Image (cartoon, rainbow, N blue to C red; front, side, top):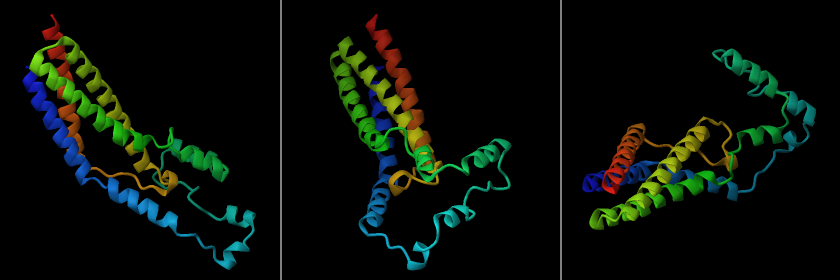
Length: 195
């Protein structure tokens, strides 16, 4: 059974690698850094517009006609928010969280795979439980990364002008399903072999 989990773990890693290879992560970072290197120029006529007149111009404060009552109340309440509060509301919970998760999720998965390989070869219970702990952390990191990307994709103002990553939904579903089965079988295998 440990070999089945090992093969399934390898399949999950392969699906994750395909997911990363087909995403726009590299292109999104390059696009976000290109405009920042060029200085922003302000036209002379827009510099003379008073702040009160600029603030009174209609922007995205009016909700779309298909908005729910809750969204309409929120839009009405948020239209008086200063720009700093609007930016704070749209900012990620932890700065750089997506970058950290982009590294930590695959790193934990690879290290856990190594421990599971050791467990498969020598059947040492400690290696199996360490691998199970790492797969648990990997699942948590993966779900957090997915949530952060979903939140960034829904946000109209991405922090730092960084576009949200885009992944293929079928590959996300395949990777998530394989990870779920891997997690369940790893727990079952570690429990059965520990008795």
